[in-house]
Length: 440
Image 1 (tube, rainbow, N blue to C red):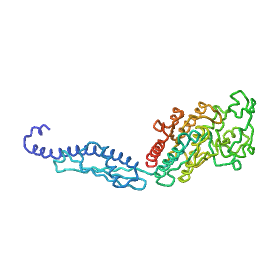
Image 2: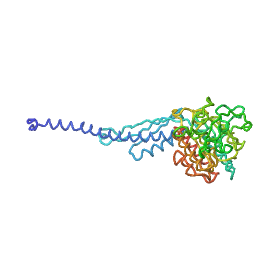
Image 3: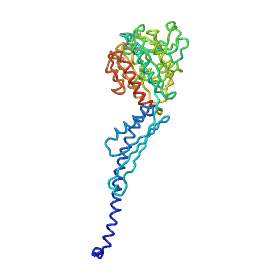
Image 4: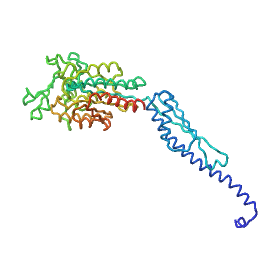
Protein backbone atom coordinates (compact mmCIF):
# COMPACT_ATOMS: atom_id res chain seq x y z
CA UNK A 1 0.00 0.00 0.00
CA UNK A 2 2.94 2.30 0.82
CA UNK A 3 4.45 1.70 -2.59
CA UNK A 4 1.02 2.27 -4.25
CA UNK A 5 0.61 5.72 -2.76
CA UNK A 6 4.18 6.64 -3.56
CA UNK A 7 3.83 5.52 -7.19
CA UNK A 8 3.59 8.60 -9.42
CA UNK A 9 3.38 6.83 -12.74
CA UNK A 10 0.36 7.79 -14.95
CA UNK A 11 -1.31 4.42 -15.31
CA UNK A 12 -3.11 4.71 -11.97
CA UNK A 13 -4.56 8.12 -12.77
CA UNK A 14 -5.76 6.91 -16.14
CA UNK A 15 -7.39 3.83 -14.63
CA UNK A 16 -9.09 5.92 -11.97
CA UNK A 17 -10.43 8.38 -14.58
CA UNK A 18 -11.80 5.52 -16.64
CA UNK A 19 -13.42 3.93 -13.60
CA UNK A 20 -15.19 7.13 -12.57
CA UNK A 21 -17.45 7.06 -15.63
CA UNK A 22 -19.25 3.76 -14.92
CA UNK A 23 -19.26 4.40 -11.18
CA UNK A 24 -20.96 7.76 -11.59
CA UNK A 25 -23.30 6.25 -14.16
CA UNK A 26 -24.26 3.47 -11.79
CA UNK A 27 -24.88 5.93 -9.00
CA UNK A 28 -26.99 8.09 -11.31
CA UNK A 29 -28.98 5.11 -12.50
CA UNK A 30 -29.64 4.09 -8.90
CA UNK A 31 -30.81 7.58 -8.05
CA UNK A 32 -33.07 7.76 -11.11
CA UNK A 33 -34.45 4.31 -10.36
CA UNK A 34 -35.25 5.37 -6.81
CA UNK A 35 -37.10 8.45 -8.04
CA UNK A 36 -38.96 6.45 -10.69
CA UNK A 37 -39.94 3.85 -8.12
CA UNK A 38 -41.32 6.63 -5.91
CA UNK A 39 -43.46 7.77 -8.83
CA UNK A 40 -44.60 4.20 -9.38
CA UNK A 41 -45.76 4.01 -5.76
CA UNK A 42 -47.70 7.28 -6.12
CA UNK A 43 -49.22 6.06 -9.38
CA UNK A 44 -50.34 2.80 -7.77
CA UNK A 45 -52.11 4.63 -4.96
CA UNK A 46 -53.81 6.98 -7.43
CA UNK A 47 -54.85 4.13 -9.71
CA UNK A 48 -56.27 2.10 -6.80
CA UNK A 49 -58.36 5.13 -5.80
CA UNK A 50 -59.53 5.56 -9.39
CA UNK A 51 -60.45 1.87 -9.67
CA UNK A 52 -62.54 2.04 -6.50
CA UNK A 53 -64.28 5.20 -7.68
CA UNK A 54 -64.98 3.75 -11.12
CA UNK A 55 -66.42 0.54 -9.64
CA UNK A 56 -69.11 2.60 -7.93
CA UNK A 57 -70.41 4.08 -11.19
CA UNK A 58 -70.40 0.89 -13.22
CA UNK A 59 -71.82 0.11 -15.68
CA UNK A 60 -70.98 3.10 -17.88
CA UNK A 61 -70.39 3.75 -21.59
CA UNK A 62 -66.70 3.35 -22.47
CA UNK A 63 -65.99 6.95 -23.50
CA UNK A 64 -67.52 8.34 -20.33
CA UNK A 65 -65.80 5.64 -18.28
CA UNK A 66 -62.37 6.59 -19.67
CA UNK A 67 -62.99 10.25 -18.89
CA UNK A 68 -64.15 9.63 -15.32
CA UNK A 69 -61.26 7.26 -14.60
CA UNK A 70 -58.65 9.75 -15.88
CA UNK A 71 -60.19 12.55 -13.78
CA UNK A 72 -59.98 10.47 -10.60
CA UNK A 73 -56.48 9.23 -11.44
CA UNK A 74 -54.92 12.62 -12.17
CA UNK A 75 -56.65 14.25 -9.20
CA UNK A 76 -55.29 11.57 -6.85
CA UNK A 77 -51.81 11.64 -8.41
CA UNK A 78 -51.36 15.37 -7.89
CA UNK A 79 -48.19 17.20 -8.97
CA UNK A 80 -45.71 15.12 -10.97
CA UNK A 81 -43.13 15.40 -13.76
CA UNK A 82 -44.25 12.35 -15.73
CA UNK A 83 -45.01 12.82 -19.40
CA UNK A 84 -47.22 10.93 -21.82
CA UNK A 85 -49.66 9.69 -19.19
CA UNK A 86 -51.91 6.95 -20.55
CA UNK A 87 -54.82 5.18 -18.88
CA UNK A 88 -56.77 2.22 -20.19
CA UNK A 89 -59.96 0.98 -18.58
CA UNK A 90 -61.17 -2.53 -19.35
CA UNK A 91 -64.60 -3.37 -17.89
CA UNK A 92 -65.75 -6.95 -17.63
CA UNK A 93 -68.60 -8.81 -15.96
CA UNK A 94 -68.19 -8.20 -12.26
CA UNK A 95 -64.87 -6.36 -12.35
CA UNK A 96 -62.98 -3.52 -14.02
CA UNK A 97 -59.23 -3.43 -14.78
CA UNK A 98 -57.17 -0.24 -15.07
CA UNK A 99 -53.62 0.20 -16.39
CA UNK A 100 -51.72 3.49 -16.21
CA UNK A 101 -48.34 4.38 -17.65
CA UNK A 102 -46.14 7.45 -18.01
CA UNK A 103 -42.64 8.38 -19.09
CA UNK A 104 -40.05 9.33 -16.51
CA UNK A 105 -37.21 11.59 -17.69
CA UNK A 106 -34.03 10.68 -15.79
CA UNK A 107 -31.55 13.21 -14.49
CA UNK A 108 -28.04 11.74 -14.25
CA UNK A 109 -28.78 8.73 -16.46
CA UNK A 110 -29.69 11.07 -19.34
CA UNK A 111 -25.99 11.99 -19.60
CA UNK A 112 -25.41 8.45 -20.77
CA UNK A 113 -28.05 8.45 -23.52
CA UNK A 114 -31.10 7.28 -21.54
CA UNK A 115 -33.64 9.99 -22.29
CA UNK A 116 -36.73 8.34 -20.68
CA UNK A 117 -38.18 5.08 -19.48
CA UNK A 118 -41.77 3.96 -18.87
CA UNK A 119 -43.36 3.55 -15.47
CA UNK A 120 -46.55 1.44 -15.38
CA UNK A 121 -49.02 0.12 -12.80
CA UNK A 122 -52.20 -1.99 -12.83
CA UNK A 123 -55.23 -2.11 -10.56
CA UNK A 124 -58.49 -4.03 -10.51
CA UNK A 125 -61.77 -3.61 -8.63
CA UNK A 126 -64.89 -5.72 -8.42
CA UNK A 127 -68.35 -4.31 -9.01
CA UNK A 128 -71.90 -5.55 -9.26
CA UNK A 129 -71.34 -8.51 -6.93
CA UNK A 130 -72.91 -7.13 -3.74
CA UNK A 131 -76.34 -8.23 -2.56
CA UNK A 132 -78.81 -6.48 -0.28
CA UNK A 133 -81.91 -7.39 1.68
CA UNK A 134 -84.06 -4.42 2.60
CA UNK A 135 -87.07 -4.24 4.93
CA UNK A 136 -89.30 -1.19 4.48
CA UNK A 137 -90.95 -0.57 7.87
CA UNK A 138 -93.63 1.98 7.03
CA UNK A 139 -96.02 3.80 9.36
CA UNK A 140 -99.60 3.25 8.19
CA UNK A 141 -101.28 4.85 11.22
CA UNK A 142 -104.16 7.30 10.91
CA UNK A 143 -101.95 10.40 11.09
CA UNK A 144 -100.45 9.45 7.72
CA UNK A 145 -103.69 10.73 6.16
CA UNK A 146 -102.77 14.29 7.18
CA UNK A 147 -101.65 16.67 4.42
CA UNK A 148 -101.27 13.93 1.84
CA UNK A 149 -98.48 12.18 3.73
CA UNK A 150 -99.47 8.70 2.59
CA UNK A 151 -99.49 9.73 -1.06
CA UNK A 152 -96.00 11.15 -0.76
CA UNK A 153 -94.81 8.02 1.06
CA UNK A 154 -96.16 5.80 -1.72
CA UNK A 155 -94.34 7.84 -4.36
CA UNK A 156 -91.13 7.83 -2.33
CA UNK A 157 -91.21 4.08 -1.72
CA UNK A 158 -91.90 3.45 -5.41
CA UNK A 159 -88.89 5.60 -6.32
CA UNK A 160 -86.69 3.60 -3.94
CA UNK A 161 -87.84 0.34 -5.51
CA UNK A 162 -87.06 1.70 -8.96
CA UNK A 163 -83.48 2.58 -7.99
CA UNK A 164 -82.86 -0.81 -6.39
CA UNK A 165 -84.39 -2.70 -9.30
CA UNK A 166 -82.25 -0.76 -11.77
CA UNK A 167 -79.10 -1.35 -9.74
CA UNK A 168 -79.55 -5.10 -9.40
CA UNK A 169 -77.28 -6.59 -12.05
CA UNK A 170 -78.14 -10.24 -11.43
CA UNK A 171 -81.14 -12.16 -10.05
CA UNK A 172 -81.11 -12.09 -6.26
CA UNK A 173 -78.91 -9.00 -5.97
CA UNK A 174 -81.68 -7.00 -4.28
CA UNK A 175 -84.63 -8.33 -2.30
CA UNK A 176 -87.16 -6.18 -0.47
CA UNK A 177 -89.78 -6.85 2.21
CA UNK A 178 -92.56 -4.48 3.28
CA UNK A 179 -93.82 -4.19 6.86
CA UNK A 180 -96.79 -1.79 7.12
CA UNK A 181 -97.66 -1.17 10.78
CA UNK A 182 -100.12 0.67 12.99
CA UNK A 183 -100.53 -0.66 16.57
CA UNK A 184 -99.83 -4.10 15.15
CA UNK A 185 -98.96 -5.90 11.94
CA UNK A 186 -100.96 -8.18 9.68
CA UNK A 187 -99.96 -11.55 8.23
CA UNK A 188 -101.48 -13.63 5.46
CA UNK A 189 -103.60 -15.92 7.63
CA UNK A 190 -107.15 -16.17 8.94
CA UNK A 191 -108.58 -17.94 11.99
CA UNK A 192 -109.44 -21.04 9.99
CA UNK A 193 -105.95 -21.60 8.63
CA UNK A 194 -103.84 -20.00 11.37
CA UNK A 195 -100.80 -22.11 12.25
CA UNK A 196 -99.88 -23.02 15.81
CA UNK A 197 -97.43 -20.14 16.24
CA UNK A 198 -100.42 -17.86 16.82
CA UNK A 199 -101.40 -17.27 20.43
CA UNK A 200 -105.11 -16.82 21.03
CA UNK A 201 -106.24 -14.39 23.68
CA UNK A 202 -103.84 -13.75 26.53
CA UNK A 203 -103.94 -17.36 27.70
CA UNK A 204 -104.36 -16.62 31.37
CA UNK A 205 -106.20 -14.80 34.13
CA UNK A 206 -105.32 -12.49 37.01
CA UNK A 207 -106.27 -12.97 40.64
CA UNK A 208 -106.79 -9.20 40.95
CA UNK A 209 -109.59 -7.61 38.90
CA UNK A 210 -109.67 -10.57 36.46
CA UNK A 211 -112.39 -8.92 34.34
CA UNK A 212 -110.11 -5.92 33.71
CA UNK A 213 -106.51 -7.14 33.79
CA UNK A 214 -106.06 -9.29 30.71
CA UNK A 215 -102.27 -9.45 30.51
CA UNK A 216 -99.49 -10.60 32.77
CA UNK A 217 -97.72 -7.23 32.83
CA UNK A 218 -100.67 -5.27 34.18
CA UNK A 219 -101.56 -8.03 36.61
CA UNK A 220 -98.15 -8.36 38.24
CA UNK A 221 -97.58 -4.59 38.33
CA UNK A 222 -100.65 -4.26 40.58
CA UNK A 223 -99.67 -7.17 42.81
CA UNK A 224 -101.89 -9.79 41.25
CA UNK A 225 -101.02 -13.41 40.50
CA UNK A 226 -101.12 -14.38 36.86
CA UNK A 227 -102.29 -17.92 36.01
CA UNK A 228 -101.58 -19.25 32.56
CA UNK A 229 -104.15 -21.24 30.67
CA UNK A 230 -104.17 -22.84 27.24
CA UNK A 231 -106.70 -21.67 24.69
CA UNK A 232 -106.36 -22.72 21.09
CA UNK A 233 -108.90 -20.44 19.48
CA UNK A 234 -112.28 -21.14 18.01
CA UNK A 235 -113.98 -18.60 20.26
CA UNK A 236 -116.50 -16.43 18.43
CA UNK A 237 -114.41 -13.39 19.34
CA UNK A 238 -111.73 -14.62 16.97
CA UNK A 239 -113.86 -16.27 14.30
CA UNK A 240 -113.41 -13.24 12.05
CA UNK A 241 -109.72 -12.78 12.79
CA UNK A 242 -108.06 -11.05 9.84
CA UNK A 243 -104.43 -11.87 10.56
CA UNK A 244 -103.44 -8.97 12.83
CA UNK A 245 -100.87 -9.60 15.57
CA UNK A 246 -99.66 -7.62 18.57
CA UNK A 247 -96.56 -7.50 20.76
CA UNK A 248 -95.28 -10.76 22.17
CA UNK A 249 -94.97 -11.61 25.86
CA UNK A 250 -91.95 -11.69 28.08
CA UNK A 251 -90.73 -14.48 30.28
CA UNK A 252 -90.73 -12.97 33.78
CA UNK A 253 -89.50 -16.24 35.26
CA UNK A 254 -86.14 -15.85 33.55
CA UNK A 255 -83.41 -13.70 35.09
CA UNK A 256 -83.15 -11.23 33.58
CA UNK A 257 -86.62 -11.29 32.06
CA UNK A 258 -86.73 -12.23 28.37
CA UNK A 259 -88.69 -9.68 26.34
CA UNK A 260 -89.69 -11.60 23.22
CA UNK A 261 -91.35 -8.47 21.81
CA UNK A 262 -87.91 -6.92 21.19
CA UNK A 263 -86.15 -10.12 20.10
CA UNK A 264 -86.10 -12.39 17.07
CA UNK A 265 -86.95 -15.48 19.09
CA UNK A 266 -88.32 -18.30 16.96
CA UNK A 267 -91.89 -19.09 18.04
CA UNK A 268 -92.31 -22.45 19.78
CA UNK A 269 -95.18 -24.09 17.94
CA UNK A 270 -94.83 -27.55 19.50
CA UNK A 271 -95.46 -27.34 23.24
CA UNK A 272 -98.89 -25.83 23.88
CA UNK A 273 -98.83 -26.76 27.57
CA UNK A 274 -95.58 -24.96 28.36
CA UNK A 275 -96.12 -21.35 29.49
CA UNK A 276 -92.59 -20.36 28.41
CA UNK A 277 -93.27 -21.77 24.94
CA UNK A 278 -96.58 -19.91 24.69
CA UNK A 279 -94.85 -16.64 25.43
CA UNK A 280 -92.75 -16.98 22.28
CA UNK A 281 -95.84 -17.09 20.07
CA UNK A 282 -97.45 -14.14 18.31
CA UNK A 283 -100.68 -12.97 20.01
CA UNK A 284 -103.67 -12.46 17.72
CA UNK A 285 -105.57 -9.16 17.92
CA UNK A 286 -108.48 -7.50 16.19
CA UNK A 287 -107.15 -5.26 13.42
CA UNK A 288 -107.22 -1.51 13.98
CA UNK A 289 -108.43 -1.42 10.40
CA UNK A 290 -109.11 -4.12 7.83
CA UNK A 291 -107.28 -1.93 5.32
CA UNK A 292 -103.86 -2.58 6.90
CA UNK A 293 -101.76 -4.32 4.28
CA UNK A 294 -100.20 -7.67 5.08
CA UNK A 295 -96.48 -8.15 5.61
CA UNK A 296 -94.71 -8.88 2.33
CA UNK A 297 -91.76 -11.26 2.88
CA UNK A 298 -88.47 -10.72 1.05
CA UNK A 299 -88.97 -10.89 -2.67
CA UNK A 300 -87.51 -9.63 -5.92
CA UNK A 301 -90.93 -9.44 -7.55
CA UNK A 302 -90.98 -5.70 -8.17
CA UNK A 303 -94.56 -5.91 -9.42
CA UNK A 304 -95.73 -7.42 -6.12
CA UNK A 305 -93.81 -4.84 -4.11
CA UNK A 306 -95.18 -1.90 -6.06
CA UNK A 307 -98.73 -3.24 -5.78
CA UNK A 308 -98.46 -3.50 -1.99
CA UNK A 309 -97.08 0.04 -1.76
CA UNK A 310 -99.88 1.39 -3.96
CA UNK A 311 -102.59 -0.23 -1.82
CA UNK A 312 -101.44 1.08 1.56
CA UNK A 313 -104.10 3.04 3.49
CA UNK A 314 -103.65 5.07 6.70
CA UNK A 315 -105.63 4.05 9.80
CA UNK A 316 -105.16 3.04 13.42
CA UNK A 317 -102.65 3.84 16.17
CA UNK A 318 -98.83 3.89 16.21
CA UNK A 319 -96.53 1.21 17.61
CA UNK A 320 -93.04 1.58 16.13
CA UNK A 321 -91.75 -1.27 18.30
CA UNK A 322 -93.77 -3.96 16.57
CA UNK A 323 -92.99 -2.53 13.14
CA UNK A 324 -89.26 -2.72 13.84
CA UNK A 325 -89.54 -6.19 15.36
CA UNK A 326 -91.20 -7.49 12.22
CA UNK A 327 -88.71 -5.64 10.05
CA UNK A 328 -86.13 -7.79 11.83
CA UNK A 329 -88.21 -10.96 11.47
CA UNK A 330 -88.45 -10.66 7.67
CA UNK A 331 -84.68 -10.20 7.30
CA UNK A 332 -83.69 -12.91 9.72
CA UNK A 333 -83.27 -16.57 8.71
CA UNK A 334 -85.07 -17.44 11.95
CA UNK A 335 -88.68 -18.60 11.76
CA UNK A 336 -91.38 -17.21 11.22
CA UNK A 337 -90.08 -15.96 7.87
CA UNK A 338 -87.02 -17.75 6.56
CA UNK A 339 -86.40 -15.96 3.25
CA UNK A 340 -83.54 -13.97 4.81
CA UNK A 341 -80.06 -15.25 4.08
CA UNK A 342 -77.86 -16.40 6.94
CA UNK A 343 -76.04 -13.71 8.90
CA UNK A 344 -72.48 -13.30 7.68
CA UNK A 345 -73.26 -14.30 4.09
CA UNK A 346 -70.42 -12.98 1.93
CA UNK A 347 -71.11 -9.71 0.05
CA UNK A 348 -74.60 -9.41 1.57
CA UNK A 349 -75.82 -6.45 3.60
CA UNK A 350 -79.17 -6.24 5.39
CA UNK A 351 -81.06 -2.97 5.94
CA UNK A 352 -84.16 -1.76 7.75
CA UNK A 353 -85.61 1.54 6.55
CA UNK A 354 -88.00 2.98 9.14
CA UNK A 355 -90.40 5.80 8.27
CA UNK A 356 -92.79 7.17 10.90
CA UNK A 357 -94.68 10.40 11.38
CA UNK A 358 -95.58 10.36 15.05
CA UNK A 359 -95.16 9.22 18.62
CA UNK A 360 -95.85 5.74 19.91
CA UNK A 361 -99.48 5.72 21.06
CA UNK A 362 -100.54 2.12 21.68
CA UNK A 363 -99.08 -1.33 22.17
CA UNK A 364 -100.34 -4.50 23.74
CA UNK A 365 -98.51 -3.79 26.98
CA UNK A 366 -99.01 -0.06 27.39
CA UNK A 367 -100.57 3.10 25.97
CA UNK A 368 -97.86 5.24 27.57
CA UNK A 369 -95.48 6.70 24.98
CA UNK A 370 -92.39 6.60 27.20
CA UNK A 371 -92.97 2.92 28.04
CA UNK A 372 -93.38 1.98 24.39
CA UNK A 373 -90.38 4.16 23.47
CA UNK A 374 -88.17 2.10 25.75
CA UNK A 375 -89.14 -1.04 23.84
CA UNK A 376 -88.59 0.69 20.51
CA UNK A 377 -85.11 1.67 21.61
CA UNK A 378 -84.41 -1.90 22.74
CA UNK A 379 -85.50 -3.53 19.52
CA UNK A 380 -83.44 -1.03 17.47
CA UNK A 381 -80.39 -1.81 19.59
CA UNK A 382 -80.91 -5.54 19.13
CA UNK A 383 -81.35 -5.22 15.37
CA UNK A 384 -78.08 -3.32 15.04
CA UNK A 385 -76.34 -5.87 17.25
CA UNK A 386 -77.40 -8.54 14.75
CA UNK A 387 -75.42 -6.71 12.06
CA UNK A 388 -78.40 -5.10 10.33
CA UNK A 389 -78.05 -1.44 9.31
CA UNK A 390 -80.92 0.96 10.04
CA UNK A 391 -81.98 4.09 8.19
CA UNK A 392 -84.62 6.08 10.09
CA UNK A 393 -86.88 8.85 8.84
CA UNK A 394 -88.94 11.15 11.04
CA UNK A 395 -91.74 12.84 9.13
CA UNK A 396 -92.89 16.11 10.76
CA UNK A 397 -93.73 14.63 14.17
CA UNK A 398 -92.50 12.03 16.63
CA UNK A 399 -89.75 11.65 19.19
CA UNK A 400 -86.66 12.89 17.33
CA UNK A 401 -84.18 11.48 19.85
CA UNK A 402 -85.79 8.05 19.71
CA UNK A 403 -85.95 7.85 15.92
CA UNK A 404 -82.46 9.26 15.47
CA UNK A 405 -81.17 6.80 18.05
CA UNK A 406 -82.53 3.92 15.97
CA UNK A 407 -80.33 4.85 13.01
CA UNK A 408 -77.01 3.03 12.69
CA UNK A 409 -75.16 6.31 12.18
CA UNK A 410 -76.12 10.00 12.48
CA UNK A 411 -75.92 10.33 8.70
CA UNK A 412 -78.49 7.55 8.32
CA UNK A 413 -81.16 9.61 10.11
CA UNK A 414 -83.40 12.05 8.21
CA UNK A 415 -85.67 14.68 9.79
CA UNK A 416 -88.25 15.59 7.15
CA UNK A 417 -90.56 18.54 7.74
CA UNK A 418 -92.32 18.46 4.37
CA UNK A 419 -93.79 15.20 3.07
CA UNK A 420 -93.10 16.27 -0.52
CA UNK A 421 -89.38 15.87 0.26
CA UNK A 422 -89.77 12.18 1.10
CA UNK A 423 -89.12 11.08 -2.48
CA UNK A 424 -85.71 12.77 -2.49
CA UNK A 425 -84.82 11.17 0.85
CA UNK A 426 -85.81 7.68 -0.31
CA UNK A 427 -83.85 8.15 -3.54
CA UNK A 428 -80.80 9.23 -1.53
CA UNK A 429 -81.04 6.14 0.67
CA UNK A 430 -81.54 3.86 -2.34
CA UNK A 431 -78.57 5.43 -4.14
CA UNK A 432 -76.34 4.97 -1.10
CA UNK A 433 -77.35 1.32 -0.81
CA UNK A 434 -76.86 0.75 -4.53
CA UNK A 435 -73.51 2.51 -4.84
CA UNK A 436 -71.92 1.11 -1.70
CA UNK A 437 -73.31 -2.41 -1.78
CA UNK A 438 -74.78 -3.35 -5.13
CA UNK A 439 -71.76 -1.88 -6.94
CA UNK A 440 -68.81 -2.67 -4.72
